[in-house]
Length: 144
Image 1 (cartoon, one colour):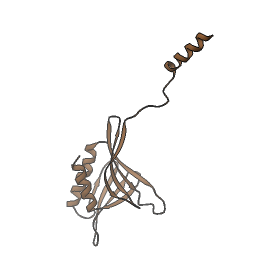
Image 2 (cartoon, rainbow, N blue to C red; image 1 turned 30 degrees about the horizontal axis):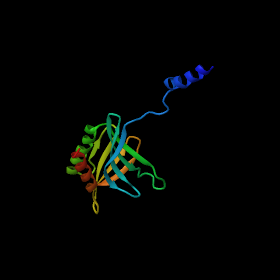
Image 3 (cartoon, rainbow, N blue to C red; image 1 turned 30 degrees about the vertical axis):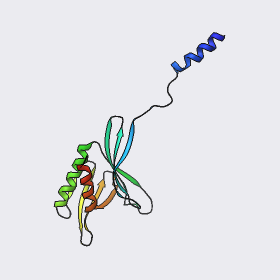
């Protein structure tokens, strides 16, 4: 009986499954454009060997509740397409639209405030940002 008990103590670790796995992931803030009520932040997310980029913002359709949304760019190339759209829209006119599969960026000129952009994601999430914020995003993306 004693040998079975001793054997079971040594054999159990070999047959037991791990209760957790170690994963190599991190989220890094690349650019925090706004804080407060309507935050806007560009982040790099690394999981295992995969890197993606995320634009995190508060959906501006909801004023009475906080509904945070994200626009995910699968890789650096997709993020650079977003940067190119902002650069082209800057040279364009009010009402110009850059359409992508998962989102749309529209330029809106406001007399008193200058140039604004409206970002509309696939599920209808919406945020607005000014030309100065767009310029900061373009600069940050170029440096990657």
